[in-house]
Image 1 (tube, rainbow, N blue to C red):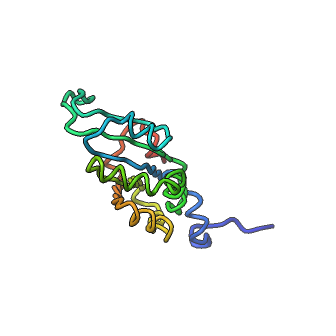
Image 2: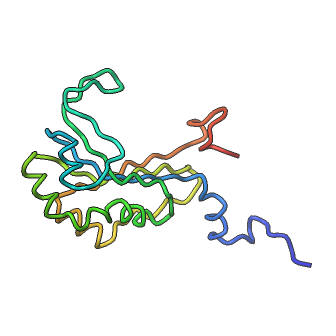
Length: 165
């Protein structure tokens, strides 16, 4: 008969598997600037998942001061977040010269957004971008923006799907 595993007999990799379902992460590519988002869509031949137009009223009630074009939203979390970054930018890899032209034409800013939310008692994901991701960011002057959120017991009270016992 096999002896039941106690906390002291569990290896660390089994603990990662137990807790990994609580961590989340999403990635996306965003262009900010003074442009018509429809022109960006047409020029790149890609459909954004969200746009905002300069001068329009935002959900907050404020008037947008710039336009934005968001593409490649990916919330397929894996501890190796580089995989998510690659999935987000892969459709853009053959559009580097177009992106450079758009950046100059519209004085636009490019960001690769990485937004992990980690439960305080769980292992953190690997946030290291690969050479391919870094090469894309360098070639297009894309800034890598990592917004890391840590959840603690005090953050989650009541019925919150992120904080489960």
